[in-house]
Image (cartoon, rainbow, N blue to C red):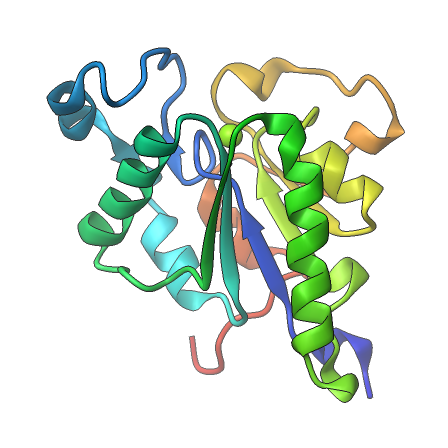
Length: 185
Ligand SMILES: [Mg+2]
């Protein structure tokens, strides 16, 4: 079987990848209405999440209440309530490594042997080269850097911080060879 036909698993970051939160410092519980009104999702977020073929998992770090509210708003505003197979909210960015490893293992073990999701078939999309990109590369995944927000200017400090692909807007993800679209979309 052609390995390119294998299923994909997508691990999405939230802040400055699916929603524009550059410069935000406060937690949701401090200024609820302010955040609710201001929260903007990337213009292509709905199309990208709808078109990609394969399970999509949200992995985000930070305050549990804040990140939960953001992910709920994403579902409601974009009309994509059940778009993520799972949502993982970890405390710190460093916790993403363990989360990525556990999620990939679970999907690998649950996928059919002829259509196994492993290695490069796991696609990580995030804005931080010292977090999503670094851990994704360490684990042998395909990494896509979203150039947005305060980390857009960061330079790789080592080989593992160099992404396989770099995109300036989320919609460009759909043109990369590492992703698969649903048939007919
Ligand atoms: Mg981020």
